[in-house]
Image (cartoon, rainbow, N blue to C red; front, side):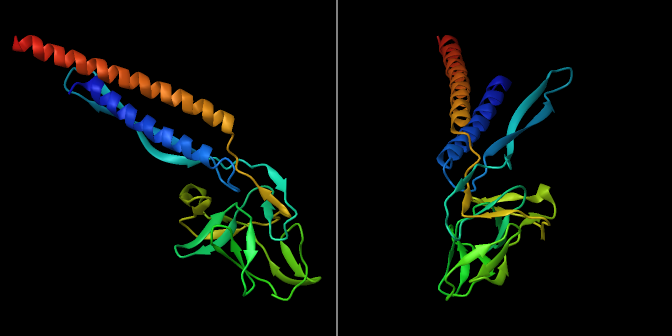
Length: 232
């Protein structure tokens, strides 16, 4: 197989991964706390032989998450919390503590706040409380009495932050608390995905993929034609 074909096949693989990522972004455009994801491409250069041109291949080596603030929407829900600025909520999962920006919680029968996707927050509220209020920096009060504190956290090393699933992130290191946190009660942070931009990008990627497929089809026809010619 010739080098141009290798390069094109590798390009097609990367474009397919990017298409899947863009499609996932669009699917989560209305998911609270979702962070837009992108594909990170790296270049691999190898010599093809003495006095020969090098071969450069692009590889979809990883993914990146856009941490830009999403829009804050007022819901007036007692257990809906939105982060204004940096930071994450810390939730306990079977895979360990994870971070999330999705702030829709529900109290369990035992008074433990449970995230909408099942993760539990280390916050306990009296099950008999008639009203729950929260200050801007996270203190929770039940019927006017302080009972708990919602804190915001960040990974000890931001470079180790990896997407676990959905709207959750695995810090891969000890999470540390953030000072001067600002949390709004009765609000939710929406996804930071711009559907129009993602649809535009999807069209661009699809066209690039189709061009690569056209080249491969023509190259296949050229090789078949050469084989038929030699066989005559």
